[in-house]
Length: 185
Image (cartoon, rainbow, N blue to C red):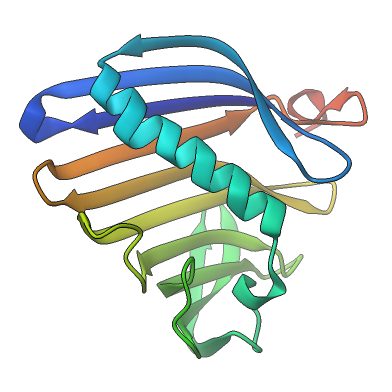
């Protein structure tokens, strides 16, 4: 799939954009074939490369201890909502035990397929001593019975940098040679 990342540190008036081809091996290893980077090196090193490293490590571990399941999270039903034209069940979620990578927030589950449509919230553990708070919204797309990450928006509050933002868009999914973006919609 293609991955397009845009990052900004408004206080420093710095921004950057990275585009690459993201590959996941049958063993779950993520690699990136670099296409291009435009912008400031601070954004590249402090936001984009850190995101890519953390994302690859998290995917490789795929720990069941972090999965959004009743074993790891408390769920409180908040009612029905609409997300991107889909009827969804909205849940407030909070981790049973606070572990790195877990969040407190909301989860939207598609009413027809019971697959996730959106997750949003704040991480319960700091990702760094320099980052006070990390909040995110992750949107999914349902295709052929799979829930695929379509876009992620991250907001960071960092000591010295102030607020920073990262938007990650995924497109042109292919599995076994067929491009999901070309399937009937």
